[in-house]
Image 1 (tube, rainbow, N blue to C red):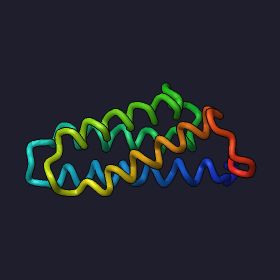
Image 2: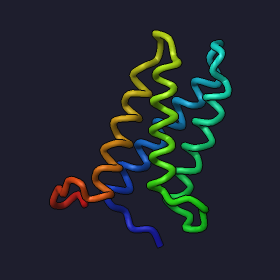
Image 3: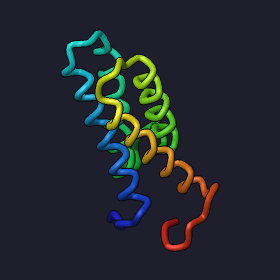
Length: 109
């Protein structure tokens, strides 16, 4: 049984944003298709790890890998489509800070 919490909703939002960014990177005419494939796979594994406990890497490790891939995508990408990647990066970093209890916000974690 899955309990709905604010942390789960934040993680889902960050994972979906990263997944959409990876899919849009695949559809673009630029030469970053390999990065798009990696981002799509890692974001999908992150989302899957939130619901399936049998994923080999934990959701924290997959979130860190997703953040790294999004940062590389921001560096490689040209001028277009930065908003979605920055939003995914911000939400995933916020989730990572909250889930590790580096900052405690009552009612949220």
